[in-house]
Image (cartoon, rainbow, N blue to C red; front, side, top):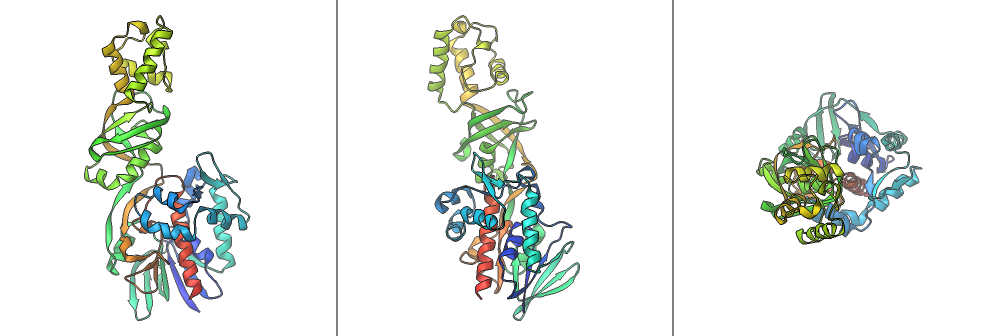
Amino acid sequence: MKQIIIIGGGAAGFFCASNLDEKKYKITILEQNSDVLQKVKISGGGRCNVTHACFDPKELVQFYPRGNKELLSVFTKFQPGDTMEWFDQRNVPLKIEGDNRTFPESNSSQTIINTFQKEIQHKDVEVKTKCSVKEIKKQDEKYLVVTSLGDFSADYVVYTTGSSPKSLKIAENLGHTIVPLVPSLFTFNIKDDLLKELPGTSFENAEVSIPSLKTEESGPLLITHWGLSGPAVLKISAWEAISLAQLKYQVEIEVNFIVKTMDEAEELFQNAKLSHPKKTIGQSKMFDITNRFWHKVLEISKVDLNKQIANVSGKETQTILENLCKKKLKVTGKSTFKDEFVTAGGIDLKEINFKNMSSKVLPNFYIAGEVLNIDAVTGGFNFQACWSEAWLIAQDLNSL
């Protein structure tokens, strides 16, 4: 019986093992940590954001800053609908939330972990934890995997290690090209009077742009203790991960907190002035923002809260509206987004055959997951890439 060694006990490794034909192969998973599926456990705040309800591959690839062209063919073979069906067949119903993120109905990542554990027990897959791979040697038709727990011989290697520098070094030593790693999905560190004392304030929709990079994203926005977070910031950090790393995370952004042009905002302001001229400006919040934020905008615009709205000058109005629609903020660094650390960079995609995720450099060697130079915005997309890639590998091996 031929031996498959899967290196890495994360999402891609376990999904591949769960779909392999155990009558054909002896399957062993090697994991360097004491626990398997660690990212699955913490994903979605412990609920596990399994996938995203986007069922058109052409639309789905738009969420991947790196890998979008390559993943198109992968998603035509296995996409979120297939993921949902796969879990459904194993009595794990998934539910689609309002923003299309998809979770187990149990709201617990343990449900997903238990499903994988059950699958691999049924297939008699051997799992070795605390097993650190030191080196992989090509020997004739086979591979020798040198680990902290001794040597393993493999007819086929499935490399799903995640993006640790050590695992990329091993791949490089075997002949693969590595695109340098940079963080993706991070929040912006900003010190500005407007954001002071307002952590927790959120905006249902805002626009964040980086004028020097000619890029803009919109979506929910959140003020944090360190600066700004939320989908609008996370999306722009993912798409511009490489440029922002080159700029050492020092850049000026422009934020439109109310997603209105200056003209539209001015019209609303003038209407409020006409409707209630005697009201104080502090009581005249006419935009979809919190009172605290409105008062802060007035404070940094140096407009007295108790001034009647009729007496607010044209110059003061312009300052208020600029702080709402065109606020320039200096980013001075980044913070990791929760524990769901994602990187751009990894094994060069030109060296992968996306029909079956096999290496073009090494025979009988398959690669999937975050070790590849593929990453996505937040919302279940990174897992979906893992499931789809791992499924292709299992199908290919099963057909040999």
